[in-house]
Length: 489
Ligand SMILES: Cc1ncc(COP(=O)(O)O)c(C=O)c1O
Image (cartoon, rainbow, N blue to C red; front, side, top):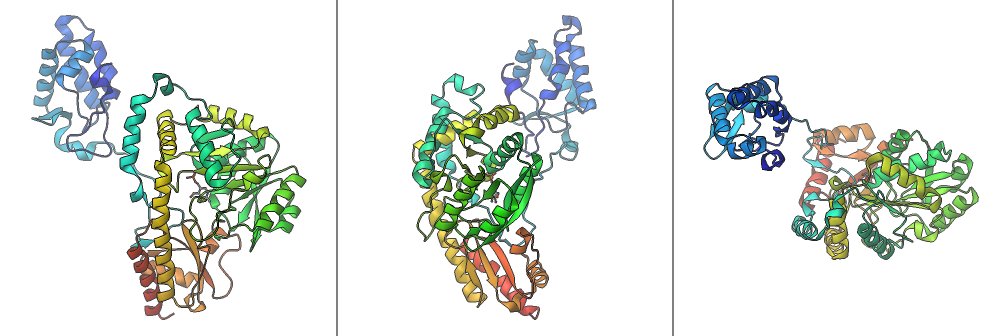
């Protein structure tokens, strides 16, 4: 197909839910192939039928008469005539400069629109949603430059189906990055590029299920995502309690599970870093039960005022499966991450990745490889690190100022902190009511814990700050404290 078939026609005034006209394309072909005398009439009735049946939806922009004539192999005059006739009949509209489109005035109302079911903020003035980077820091200019550079140099063959593990240049670059920044023992042959930690977890779930693992242990409190993702692979989760050093060892041994899913660099959500002793104990456990520690390094890139804690995987690559992504460092919408599993699991993970989606999009992978090798990724991390440290400081400062007596923890790394509020702020349901009234969205720690609402009057909040400006952070804390005061806590 020539130009018109490959363009993405749009409504003249630009619409997010733009219909394309490709669905109607084949309806026109019989008319184009008809004997010359009937061709014009048939073309017009095929157009009418396409509009009536909805195959050509209201708002769809049509190719220029020259393009369509070339695509259909008919004379331009025939197409111009069809456009004019259908416009006269009201099926089409045209404007000088905007071209021709279907449906005219009814366009906006009639055009089928795709709904957006992406997670949304709940309409709050300030939303302390944890785990969200600042999307306005996405390095658009550098990404666009990399895009152009990659398109110019990428050989045609790289646009074919990729190695399901990922493009070799990306796996090589990731191996270097993970070794350098996180102390990961990274063999590029074993890295699997995937759609974020989420897909890495799913791949692991299937691979473990194939080996007969029916239940894996997860941290409690922990990320509800882990349970949901394993459940989707038919693997159950057992909640395992934490102590102040990380996953508590006694309950882990007693549980009988042979796989434990952990967030050792900055436990989600409590924010603790696993102690050196607990890291060693965890690996001893994995060796003793011939098991596996899954290391979700979801925000391991961001550390502020504590010594770097390398990845657990670096200490025992045959007993740790390491996962990470660009969701916190670049943007979650890129859906790009990686999985590095012990050799015994890699084969079935790669097979599963292939049957799931034949590999991640090649262009995105080439772009990330360019970003990593050219230094843009490190620059981005430094930039975010500075911004997020300032925001963390702003949050801690605002809490001290407006909520005297609040105790903060988990502040040395990551994109969120835990704030334990003084008793007068509790009990939890009342605090949440006050917050909702002030239109400040907060999540209690209990939301991530099987123990539920804290006993007594205590209440701890998981406060994400990375996506908020320092002034929004201060405003949110002020509003929350003000609402509690005003409503007579
Ligand atoms: C602890 C934790 N792990 C993993 C994920 C999913 O990350 P990804 O976007 O890399 O799939 C999240 C999502 O926020 C998370 O909170």
